[in-house]
Image (cartoon, rainbow, N blue to C red; front, side, top):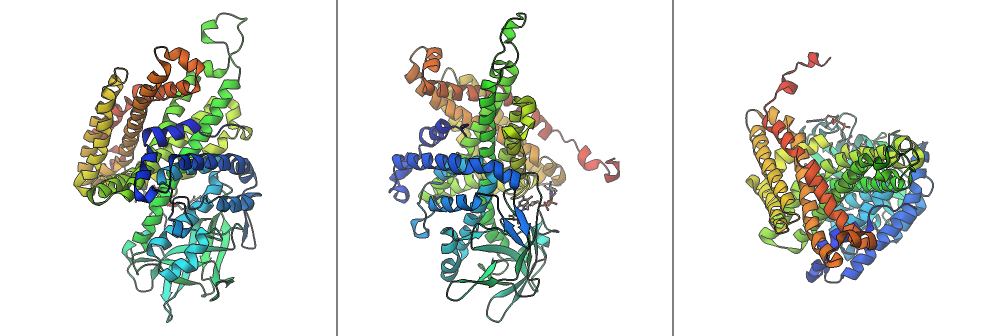
Length: 610
Ligand SMILES: Cc1cc2nc3c(=O)[nH]c(=O)nc-3n(C[C@H](O)[C@H](O)[C@H](O)COP(=O)(O)OP(=O)(O)OC[C@H]3O[C@@H](n4cnc5c(N)ncnc54)[C@H](O)[C@@H]3O)c2cc1C
C-alpha cells in the first residue's frame, strides 16, 4: 500500500530536532524512555495505515445516514472505534489516573498526524470526546468526573461541543439556547444547535454534550453565556443509561468532505424535558469552552498536516510511476523513451514545494506540542514563556496550516493531471476533506483576528518577542555553516520584515485606523506562517547537514545514491534551500502590502460590489 506520511521525518523531528527523549529526565515523564516513544510511534503508524486508511474511502462513499433520528456511521467505523479505544489512542497524553499513558504532547501530535492523515472523518469522533473530557477534567466536580469523564475516556461514551446555532456562528455572543434553573440545582435546556460534529452516532452507548446556553435573566453577549453538561440519554442513579433526555438529532448535513463524520442538527428540550448540569460557574461558559477550543484548534492543525502529508505521498508515488513525455534533454530525439514525470522540472517544482511545506508544517505542529510539554515540566517564568508560545502559535498553526494543507492537496491533484480529478486516486478526497479545517473551530479569518487582536499584544508584545528570539537563535546557529549561511541571512531578513510588518499592523489595529489594521490580519498571519516554516526548515537543515557530513564523508552525491538515510538528510537540506530560496523572498512583497495603507476594500460602497 502507499506509504502514508514520512516515517523518518517524524522521528527526525521528535528525536533529532526536539530531542523529546530528554523529557524523561523530568519526573513527569521519568517512567518513559526513547524506546517507549519509538514503539508508540510505530504502533500509531501501523494502526492508522492498517485500520483507519482502508476505511477512508468507504467513509467518503457511504457517508453517514439518518433514519428516524438514528445516525449510522459508515461500515467499519464502529469496529475501528472499538479498536482505537482498545489500543489506548483516546488518551495517550493524559494522566494514568484517567486511564492515560502520560506521554508527551509532541509524540501524541505525531501519532495524531497519522490518524488524521489516514481518516480525518473518523478522527473527529475521538477528538471531540477527548476535548469534552478535558472540560470535565479541569472544571468538573468530583461527582461529574465520576459520572461522565471516566466513562467518556474509557470509550464507553462519546463527547461533542455544542456551540454553533443557526444564527450564531463566529459570534457566539448572540446565541439563543436557554437554561432554566430547577429547584434541584439542575437546568432545563432549550434550543437548537447546528453543525454539531458527532452529535449523534452509533459508535457508543451514550453521548455527552457540553452545551453553551444562557441562563434565564443573564445578559446578552459573551459574558452572559454558561456551559452545561447534557447527556443525550439520562443516567439513572445506579449509573445505567436511561431514557432519552429530550435531546434529538433532527438532521445531518450533506457536505463537501469528511462525509464519515456526522455533522448534526440537535434539538434540545423540544418537550421541555432536557436536563443539564452546569459546568463551573454561571456566566463562565465561554472561558471554560476555550479550553476545549484551544485543544481542538491544535487538532485541526494536525488534521491539516495529516491530509497534506497523505496527499503529498500519494502524488509522489504517482509521479515516480507515471511515464509521460521525453526528458527535456532528449527533446529533439523522437526515439527517446518516455520518462517518469518526476523527472520534469515543473513536476519537481510542485513536489519540492509540497515536500517543504509539509515538512515545515509538521515541524511547527510538533514544536507547538513540545512547547506544551515544556510548559508542563517547568515552573514560574519559564513555564509562562512556553505557555505563551503555545498561545501565539495556536492561531498560526491552525490557520496557516489549514490554508497551506489545502494548497498542498491542490498541487497534489495537479501532479496527477486528469487522474488527480478522479476519485480512484484518492487525492481529491484529501482536498475535499481538508477544506473544513479552514472553517471550523473558528474560521481562519477569526484566527487572524485572534493573532492580531489578542496574541501579538499579549504581555505588551513580550510573547511575540520571545518567538522572534527563538527564530534568531536558529539563524545564529545556522550562520556557522558555510553552506547554510546565505540561507540563514535570508531568514534573518524575512524575520526583520515580519517584525516591521507586525509593528505597523498592530499599530493600526490598536489606533484610530483599526479597520485598516484588521483588514491586514489575514495577510499578516500568512507572513508569520511563511517565516516560521522557514525557521523550522533552517533549524532542521542545520542538524541534517551535520549528520550528512558524518555519513557521507566527502562524497554526498554517492552517499545519497547508496544510503537511504543520506538521501533523506540531503532532502531535508534541499527542502530548506527551496523554501528559503524560492518562497521566502515573497515575504518582501507581502510585507509591502502590509505597509501600504490601501483602503479601497474599506472605502468601496457596498452597492459598488457589482
Ligand atoms: C463540518 C462542520 C463541523 C462543525 N462542527 C462543529 C461542532 O462540532 N460544534 C460547533 O459548535 N460548531 C461546529 N461547526 C460550526 C463551525 O465552527 C462554524 O461553521 C464556524 O464557526 C463559522 O460559523 P458560520 O458557519 O456561522 O459562519 P459565519 O460566522 O457566518 O462566517 C461567515 C464568514 O464571515 C466571516 N466573519 C464572521 N464574523 C466575522 C467577524 N467578526 N470579523 C471578520 N470576519 C467575520 C467568517 O470568517 C467567514 O468567512 C462545524 C461546521 C462544519 C461545517
